[in-house]
Image (cartoon, rainbow over the protein chains, first blue to last red):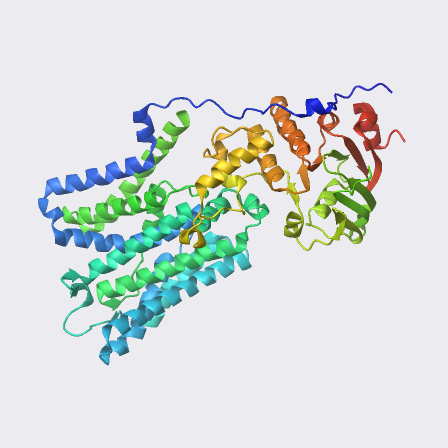
Length: 353
Length: 250
């Protein structure tokens, strides 16, 4: 039989030249690259908003106004960063708002008798934090079990937790907040050597988000978060225990929602069942404005932080310039819409370059 | 060849219920060989590679790696024994950089306290990824680029480079040139040759017979779960190979 096969067999021919996989990088104009950077865009939006508000009324930059802003930001940023992990991994957690309420309510329920019996306040706060954290993690673990153990789609599993959590928060309070009145002074007005207690709390919150940001960008846990969202099968094939990691994202999200629930207990001086009613969607909006893909695999922690800051400035700024309270959600919604349009324009710009 | 085969299957059989997927399959593979594994759909190619890579356990027979009998409980065991498998379309994580993909699941940590906390040594991973890929014949420019910036052929080359870099003995490639254009396929075939020249045994599963004839040293033809032919590539042509696969020339 005649050999028609093309065959390379001499060992000299077996050393192939390196296939060159370098595609020429086209020069991108600097202004366009800068514009295409989502963080730049977000930062500019944030600064412009604040300057406009300050211009409107210089009272905006007073420390009382700023600390109010900081407290609102602290009540959002933890759940938004947790949501960033979940969404980058290809999932979603709709339950955070309700988990905040349930954790806050149960923490308040645990703290109330201790406060009434004048137990040391540090002990009370630590116990409340532990309860809130525990309840949040338990809720997250239930989400994780549904998603990983029973293959329930994250959207549905966490939607059920959101709805059930709202119900439980009402059941356990009878609709009335648990009042926490530690003596003459409320926690939100307290100062520890001259610095407001709330500012210390915000500092702790910011510390936690910085650690989480570093973990997302620099540590193996963050790397696997991206890998799982980018190509679940490849992550599995690389020997990553995908199930365990996916479960952990929901537990993390629950834990941070729990801590945020405790934050609101301290700030409001009560554990209210209505806490966090809009938080879930505002947190997801912050993540999306921040440039994280809802399909998973890509996103940044700084984007989420800036997204959260923008939403809080808009919300509080609207109140500050006397927009009627009922209109505030409409204003916030418009900003979400505009920011999304800018984001998609940015993506087009990047694709063209 | 008198040396110990790097991979040997002895009388391996596997069935699912009443369906016999593999019947009494035996062969030996040596280091520095590319072996083509061909056969029609349902001939047992998939069952064979899944048995070798630890996805399935054989009902009968044994698998030897470097002369030692091995029993896989999971794909992880096969990887630990030096067998890397690149499944069809399993590929890479497109949003991660090339370097991160190469080290996925085997990340290098920093050599400080931070490293013990799980923080990664990204710079070392990227420079090592570049060096190791060049050893198997892939030059990528910068390991910092994300995989989504690469073409299909480049991605496949990087995926094979990754397998070749970590495999101690055998890499199994399931249809690596599928969906690729002619030029891109050539890149992939080059990487396979480079892997062989580094002393690995490459099992190449493909339907594209010209590719199989071009790159392999030996071809194993499977039909209905049995090995019907195992011979040096020089004994085949496209026609004779096709005849053997379909069972027309016996």
